[in-house]
Image 1 (spheres, rainbow over the protein chains, first blue to last red):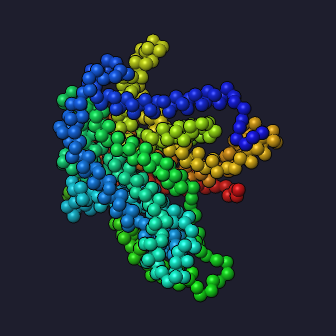
Image 2: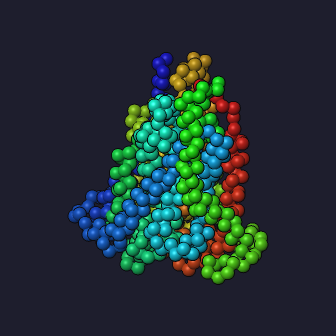
Length: 281
Length: 316
């Protein structure tokens, strides 16, 4: 029997149909979000599956200008980029050291970093708030940037350590024979080799910070500091006073989701490989 | 995870004084400077606050006035707090019920799409909710299942049933469970698929030749050879399920307040007893105690899980 082929069975056919139904469901949801953002609330409830009669761009305008999504986008982009870059810049050398240097402490230290993955943000949020309040970094985007960078170090070290370990050692040793120092070896040989792993972890971190909410809720109080998650929550809350405006709500949702869609379409395969790489260790 | 493996380049016999040991010695000089920034950030913003949370849990504190020593008082109070009981039970139900459903569904989907055409596309679409903000997913879920929402409209058109109150207080938590399964399945399909993909085809051929049916192939080929990945996924789910926050939080939605305590999990309890809601309670000591209890419980669960799932490694 040829490898991988099995006779089709009714059970498998039903299962396959269900899977495609789930795929269709996911796709339909996001198409719906995009379409609904151009319709008025009344339209959405009257005919959920209809197309917009006119393109109600004012939904987008309202979300962008009146509900602070413009400012929130700026904040979130800045936080996500700065936080992800910092976490990666700090963690890559550490991961290199832990994967390449043969000392007795390397193993236990690796485990020590991994422990951080198991510590949820809601365990540390109260002491962090007290600490940041003492230095006056509450309600500050800079303070949140520091927090985001630090809290993403465990995951980044974890992923990159495994990744560095999988890279071949001979290239560096050949360079060492030619007289390269470890410092140069790291910058000129290791990092280029590790480019794909570093890019993957950068993007994973950007996505994580983009969607982060708990720390934002606790540490940001003024509307001009809000991230996109907070702006969206705020908009939902305000709907109880200004009336249900699902059109604009979905426009806000689209502002939050579309950049991630773009990232995903562009880098999706890389992301999937990155996650499975981490889980294969 | 291969912690403690000797760094690449180790050899069985003592290497001659060559580039290897020169490089090693050189690297050793970099060890501390390379580690220190990451270690400092980690210690300052993750480890130290965790220890501090333990310290705070033994006090009464609102963040502003002085801390007041309270010994085990917070923990004792938690034991008789029905809101905490609910949160604890909900967290465990999410872990076991949603987790079980996720694994069954993910495994089934993995086995189904392994040989499908377009499997990469299916995997991509199923994975997508994982990178979308949980708040958005919660809004979508809430919107679909509203009383006058889309699901009821479709059910009414197809079967003529009256609208079902999917999201009223009694049904809200099961709907949250279902939503969690929906948004998590893609990630676990991806992880399990990667593990199952590594199984060489000849194992299945041998099994088929020996007359094994589909279920026996699952039990004797697929499961044992992907056990590593399953263990990793199970550990990851255990850790992740404790962190669930945004999806549940956004069900408070238009009320500008928290969702009802009946659907709180551990994270919501901590938030609800400290900063959350329209009139925050600022019970920092109490909230920290609950966080410590849940962290301890889940640490034990992870250790037990790994022990239960441990098998001899299968080389192939």
